[in-house]
Amino acid sequence: MRKFYKITPEGTRDLLFEECEELLREKRELREHFASYGYKQVNTPNLEYYDVFNVNSAGIAQEKMFKLTDGNGRIMVLRPDNTFPIARLVSTSLQHQQRPIRIAYNQSVHSVGNSLRGKSCQFEQSGIELIGADGKAADLEVITIAIETMKRFGANFRFEIGHAQVFKTLIAELPIDADTGEEIRRIIEQKNYPELSQMLEGMEQTKAVVALKKLPRLFGGVEILDRAAKLCEGLSCVSCLEYLREIYNDLSALGYGDSVIIDLGLVNRTEYYTGVIFGCYVNTVGDSVLSGGRYDNLLEQFGTHDPAIGFAVNLSAMTSFAMKNITEKQKAADILVACISGKTSEVEAVKKVRELIAANPGKVVISGWFDSKNEAEKYAEENIINETVYYGEGK
Image (tube, rainbow, N blue to C red; front, side, top):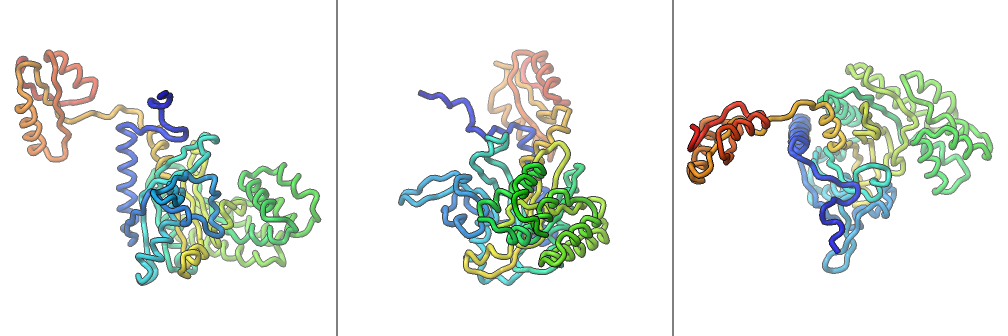
């Protein structure tokens, strides 16, 4: 029984005309934007072997991947992340390429279960990876490109920066297992203060426990780092806080101070990230529309020892955001070749369309078949076509 032949799978949807054009425009502009900083495009397969993502500290649960098998019974997945295939690519086709390598991409990703939270299971990403570069200069390069990327969308946004090692240091001080640590991370990410306090209340109130309780509230300006330094006094993460202060001051000197917020509760995928971590939020869009950070250990899983940092933009979310601000109906074409039924041949119509396209570079020309001139005029008016060329009766 064909129950589902007229619907799309949960978490997916069709994109129509204007939205497709907006998505293509954004992809084109970001490709040019990244290229201006020396980042070159790559494409990886939509299908990858499961082993590409089955690495230590991947941060992608296997139940979040769409799986299938190839002709030999090997497990494959629809790409759930773009960075891992690029790590595979760097360790194989680009293993002898001089470092650093600047890579850009425009590709889709797929994630099981997002639909249960009202999210898409498939969305478009555009991003960059700086492979083989370490230190503050590399971090500033990628972070400033990320901020400039968001400015191109013309949206009000807040750009948050944190450091993965702050949470890692504090959680390592607790006498808990990995699963409990992940639960605490999830609670902090959601900024669920009551649940976090309840979970930590039964533990010995050490410096690390007290700091973890307050971590979700540690967001704002540079003064947050002073508060955090007092909470973490004597712990190794103090050096990470000082590094964040340097990054924040440098971003302020570059004119980005008003756009940047320090958020020490930024703890997404901390098992994957190793250093500075950042995300961006836009009004009316619930989740982050850009995320990234330093991940110096991933390439080791593929046989190379390259430090790396990068980010990805959720283009599907930004396209939906842009569509909310488009109120005017877009025109279907610039010129309509209106053919009166029975009075014009199909060959004549095709010739005329080709002739008008050649004579009017950049303009859109379509043909239509109508029973009368009035019908053609109505069609042109409804589709915002300002110029009509008539063929046949009613010229």
